[in-house]
Length: 228
Image 1 (cartoon, helix red, strand yellow):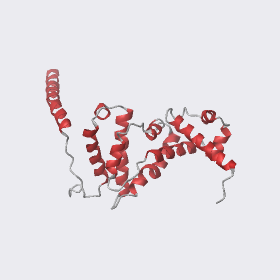
Image 2 (cartoon, one colour):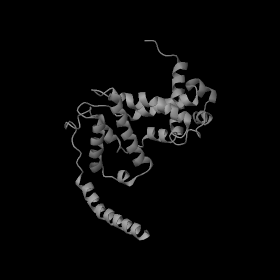
Image 3 (spheres, one colour):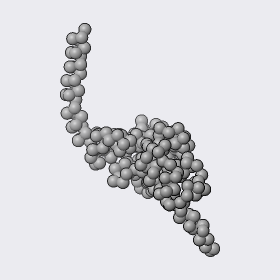
Image 4 (cartoon, one colour):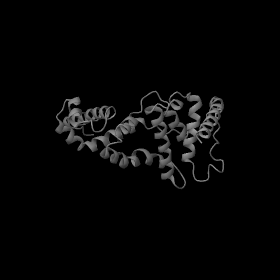
């Protein structure tokens, strides 16, 4: 087998360094604040080399999104459902790099268009390809919508019910929710997806909250009557 020329190997190495610098920049700053010249400076190359390696800023952003997604996508293993593997991934200690790249850039029209175009091949398509039955694309889209929603509430907004949740309590609920998204039409009604049961810890918290809600409702009705 013919060895690659040294120049080619060096070019690939530099391209990898540029991509790593782009991942760090897009994951820690807004799309508007990320400049190609800063990425070039991080690597120690001329900005013209960044353009030559990746093209435009949008193309580099798309490459960074693909690279981060490739690192974080769970490896599907036999004997475990997709819902179980992705629910487990939500509780990993490692920060979700892809989520940071997406959230920090959503307000920018150019970045948002890249995200829209890449959502199929990076997020929805790989899930849809594993599903059988009708409406695979729609089911995979709902699956990703749930994943992103949970991730944003937990990691970005820090909503306490998700951020501070006990994994043993919350993970089964998330897993069942994701399983419902992936289930073929009619499977839920026919009992193919396990019915969601509320863990005892959450049931106790809900029971404690009910009296407070009733008291608040009575107080609101009383205030409304007094205003009349």
